[in-house]
Length: 212
Image (spheres, one colour):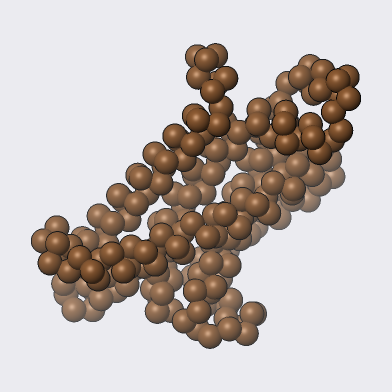
């Protein structure tokens, strides 16, 4: 803990990097997962294709994706996109099933009532289907966010990685306090992110609280 207070500027610098490399992939993966999850919820064929594909993506080691991304995209090794793209892929792989299952769980009588009231597909999705699917979707998003926050540190192997840099530097110089600072930062960031998403979920679904 003393290292954090004595090197606050350095700690805050790696915290900003870690936060950016965690949040941006989550947002990208989540946005991409919404249409794919919707498709999977409406089509058995799409589900049969997308779910195994997502499982395959998630089994690819993160270090392999991070190392190969500069080659595939033709970017510099220290470009943050080398971490953002692999983590966005993992988020997408996790969220496709979450979004699909959440939309599939929307009560059929509610969907029928919305159709009877003349709701067009897009309007029904935005005002009925997706809001009712939010509790399950937010739960999946919390898992994806925790996963990303933990995996960002792997980026230190290519010179990025936020708190991962403290792990690497601490190990190379036998500086245990640096490693401990990175560990504390990762845990605190994960807890805060999870609490924030939980709060957002509750604010967006007041009917769920009323039901309990």
